[in-house]
Amino acid sequence: MQTSPSSALPVGRGLLYVTIAATAWGTAGAAAALLYRGSGLGPVSLTFWRTCGGLVLLLAVRGVLRRRAGTGTGTARRPAEPMRRRVLRTAVTGIALAVFQAAYFAAVEATGLAVATVVTMGAGPVLIAIGGRVTLGERLGVGGVLAVAGALAGLLILVLGGSGVDAVRPVGIGYALLSAAGCATMTLTTRWLGKGGGNDPYASTISALAVGALCLLPLAAVEGLWPHAHDLGRSLWLLGYIAAVPTALGYGLYFAGLAAVRAATASVISLIEPVSAAAIALLFLGERLTAATAIGTGVLLAAVAALAMTEARGAVAARSAAAVG
Figure 1: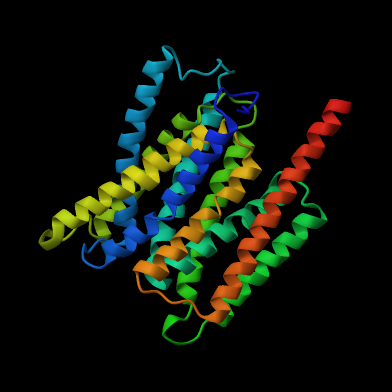
Figure 2: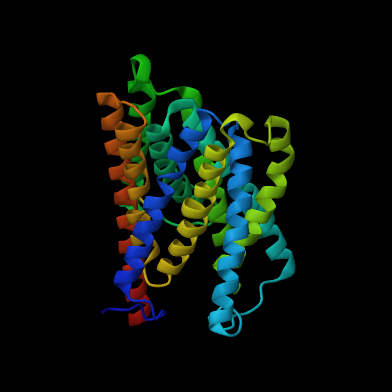
């Protein structure tokens, strides 16, 4: 079986890991939608418990991996990251992660699981591409520009095309775009401040989750930190699921898969998340999509897939040029 040159993990298994992770992420919003029906928790409190639970579980997973590896994390020792850069990166990514997750759950509450997930996951890569061009000087190229334009057209159809009881709510779109902005900030900060450092992705995520939990705690306390007692067992089960499956398992498998799968390939596979979320919303949560919403969703996802393919072709061209040089 084919393996990545930088990892002993077979490529096929890496693809499987990323696929499972993306599918697991698609269930987080569904669990949140169920929690809103009886727990009394709001988006910030829900995000706080997800962050804390995921933090504890990822710490346990990382501890097991370190023990299996014998020393460190099982990877080659890399140059230490300067302390000032590490603190700044951790603070920014932690705050951005908290905004990303809390705004996404707020979008689910405001405009439904399917639309919230599609807009968040569709707008994220577009904002990352635009932000990379503005802040890091990364070239989009003709294909990238067309993909961004297509994604914006899909978003416009979603916003303007809803009608009736299942209309796309502007406030929900706003929360979804805020969530996408948090995701883009997190990614661009990692690209900018992470260059030249030897960062363990598990350690980076754990640090970001810890910062996010600290930021969310006072806001969650104001919103209402504890679920209602009358249906406590169901609420605790759903909170445990969100922390364990979409958070700890999802991120763990995703990081492991990235050792063998290209980032552009992983971004395309991650489109499973909005597709699975939309399927769950339609089949189990009673949500309905209008024709305009379905068209906007299709245009948006196609544009994001095209953007990822453009990135992949650019990476291949850059490697070929480096090899020739």
